[in-house]
Length: 335
Image 1 (cartoon, rainbow, N blue to C red):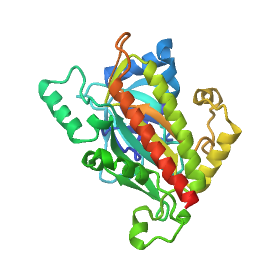
Image 2 (tube, rainbow, N blue to C red; image 1 turned 180 degrees about the vertical axis):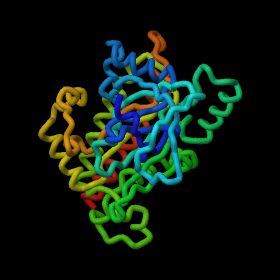
Image 3 (tube, rainbow, N blue to C red; image 1 turned 45 degrees about the vertical axis):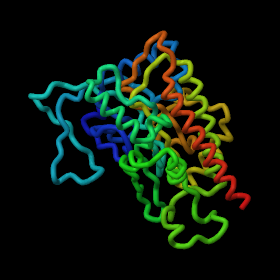
């Protein structure tokens, strides 16, 4: 694949392990792979039993081996291409080639929601199992099946993404989750029913979508996550460390165009795009948001094991949190 001789670090990564790259044009994501994750994507792609999951995972283009290491020098500036150079002492490592989910967004707001109540797989040592059980108890994972791994929200006044780190999600209690969701889906200050004081306005200054855009985004997003829940309920799997990745457009004009596009394409199917994709100078129009399941390095597929109840609990929690935020946004309309 020619794009791999020039790759760049993924600058919108809010969760997961470091080392994820993108192709030079930003359309592909190149991620170090473990065998279980390769097997998962291959099964979902080829096995009819897992077909219901296909619309809800990133498009899989295969694997490649980066025969070398990433060369980083002091002269490189952020965002410029980095180079993969030959390293004779290092064996070639297999990587997944996936679609870069944030590529079609102008200003992507991104949230990684870690799913599940069990944070270790069957291969975990007793020490790791005890450590992960402690982490689940001390965070929101055990009680709710979710943890807010990290998120970014664009400050439109500065044009820069403001990141909320993993430490936030690990520090909050279940009762704080609605506030976390509200921070990720802020309402534009211009739409507040009354002028806010500086202290009230500070947390969301320059961020958020107007109510008339945010509300339909939330409602449609909730419908998609309900479909993901239904698909997962049919799957025989155990998912450890998997996430829901939620992305929506922070740019007002672009988000409005996305809603219009959805009205014009009510039967849109994400898989139908593959035949129509061309190399275009500008990014194609599409929905103002997307949601996918990601991170399957510790996912096990197996007939007869049934659905992962801890993951289903986590998706139910996300649905309840979205219901609460939808009601909050509706209340601003009637205030």
